[in-house]
Image 1 (spheres, rainbow, N blue to C red):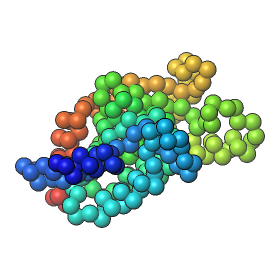
Image 2 (image 1 turned 60 degrees about the vertical axis):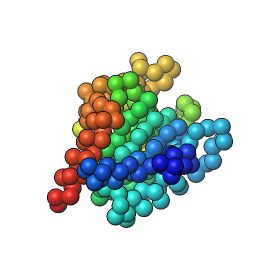
Image 3 (image 1 turned 45 degrees about the vertical axis):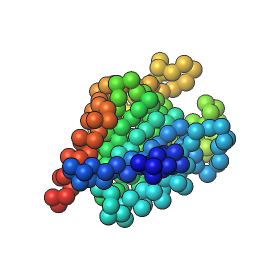
Length: 221
């Protein structure tokens, strides 16, 4: 128990052992702001992608880990870092389940849908908006084209790993009524399921049940 508490305190991680089902589940937390190449202030709660990527690689190669539970409560952050995390999670051979708690905003959306199955608690939110830099209007055509390419990459990933259509996702992104003086949409709990982004409304119990089920199915292959 002491080692578990130390790992949670130091890294926000823990391997949960289920003696009855004999499954070892790795809990991966994506919290605060996703930090990329720029180092954020020490006062900001962050998830550092250079820490997360080696963890995911180690999970893939570990014989002791049977599945991964991804807990999200993030405001978003660095686009490239977020996409890198999402791509790596989606390529894992082990069963994965995500659970959105509090929020999974902006680049947190691709991470939330990168798993085999996704849950969201009723009160959690997802903010979906176009790629931007602090709300600044992009004037140069070359810069606009670059951000458009990034946005297309995000949209392609989300639509590939969920059931929402690209047309509908773009409509949600470009909504002018939801966010004051900005573009985008805030979706709460069941709305994310209705829009076919998240699979199901549920909590930690449902997430574990689904993950144990996926691990059982995976062991039969």
